[in-house]
Length: 320
Image (cartoon, rainbow, N blue to C red; front, side):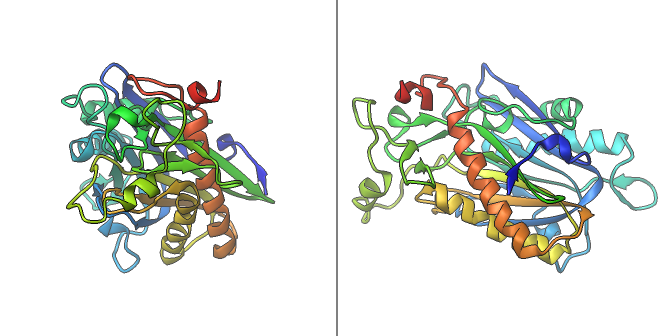
């Protein structure tokens, strides 16, 4: 496997929109011709849209866009703007009188960053679509990653800034990439050596505490910090059936498990989508393996490419 560019996947357009002052935003991944979808909701506190439609036993066999956004459940409004944009473009499931765009979405909780009463809405979703193009998307404090942070077990005072990261891999003519907005309860670690890249800080904010070690001491408590969730989209040019795309979404979560400690908790709504554009014959297990690696790399970049903001330290602040 080698690194590749999102520009190599010409049937996928990506756009961001954000309110930097308010600390929230959304990211849209569009496939105008429709992509074979898959989804795996692994966390215990998800906020999603149209995931049932993506089940392999159900009718719809193409998705036209996936939206990642902040705003918690309020942010689901962003899909209305994406729906309006795609309908105007004549993109969607043909029902005779119009075409109904199939737009799936997952949200993350960023209400403790910036202004809690400003959330992604229809206008922001439309803005993201208007900005969408075949590109290597901006990383860091952009789109759905604008208000993201990690290491929140003891509250925002000892959390760190995270954001949005991307990765694209190539094996021969097969392309597999990931777009990840990382907002986990726990720590983000380097999968190569287990070193913490960002997460729960010690009180002096000069080094890391261990989320897992401290969390174990909460074994008899009713609940822990609820404002989390990491979400993402795997894109590929592979020819896949819907059931295969669903399995690949499941395999992709290995990338989360290798980089977040802990992962898939009851207070994380971790959700991964797959969009397969159907141009390259591919063995599904190879696609799934590459997808997990792309997710892994995108998670790491969501930390290393994100500067501190909103009073939260970033990776670069601790690496000085």
